[in-house]
Image 1 (tube, one colour):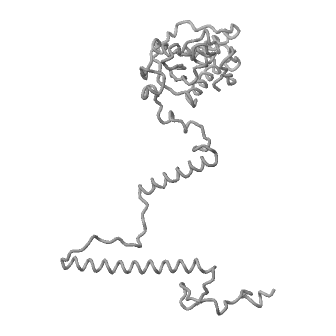
Image 2 (cartoon, rainbow, N blue to C red):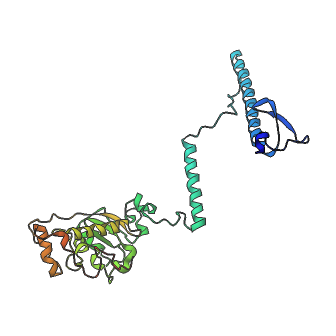
Image 3 (tube, rainbow, N blue to C red):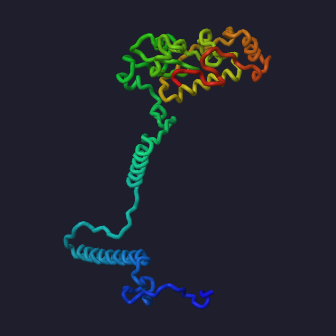
Amino acid sequence: MSWIWNPSGDASKPTPAQEMVPDPSDPNRMVSKKAANQPFLAYHEYKREQEQLHQTWLQRKKEREEKLARGEAVGPEERDPTAQEEVGLLGFLKFIVYFVLIVALAGKFFTGSFLWEYDGKWARLKTYWPVSCNVLFPSLRFARNPPVAYFRNPYLATFDGMDPNKPIYIAIDGEVFDVSSNRRVYGPGGSYNSMAGIDAARSFGTGCFQTHRTHDLRGLTDAELKSVQHWKKFFAEHKSYFKVGKVLHAPIDPQGPIPEHCNPTKEQPAHQTQTGGASESSSKPWVQPGPSPTRKPEHEEL
């Protein structure tokens, strides 16, 4: 309990060799120039120099105004050297650019990727520029004659991969996608060439890739419709595929026959669903080898 008898502590007193200077905050007090006091003293020294510069500038400004009053020629007005710089829009944009560059270079250094190995939708050009490269830069792709943004079925059929000078398009639920980057799968002889050049949306829900090459979605169960949307989203967000347009389908006759299911055991539940007979949740679509609504297909592209 020695601190009770010695409140000031046992700190060593400055030796005579230590230089003492007035305390900037209290002129009646002296402080040593030890290392612990250097930041405090340096800050006050900086403030003192800034004040001197400001006063000198005020004096020059006063002299300039007096010369102007006498009609004498003077130079341009001098800026206050102690004025704080305001960060304007240009300064803010510079900060953003420098920050992005530093982050990108750090990513390249630590991960080998400027985007820190991120490969999501926001890293793809088509997210911000959802236009076919064939339309804007035909020389960079396979098409010599760039396609239009809207397709009718006969024109869409010409992009089935049979012409090596044209890209390969598939359509699903009215949306057309360029899948030319995977000609081995969607081109001639590929396992999914039957989907090329046509809107076979129904087959994506039922798995009937040979018989349901149509966009007619009537009579599908909820699970089958979800499967169609799943594959539509798959192609839209795929890093190698991109949307190129839409299909102009002719209206479907609501009284026309519904395509028969390739699996007879699923034909009756599907038609009962349309008429409200069977429960949609109780019928699970049977699928042939290929895209499945409950699991990812064994595509070579994946």
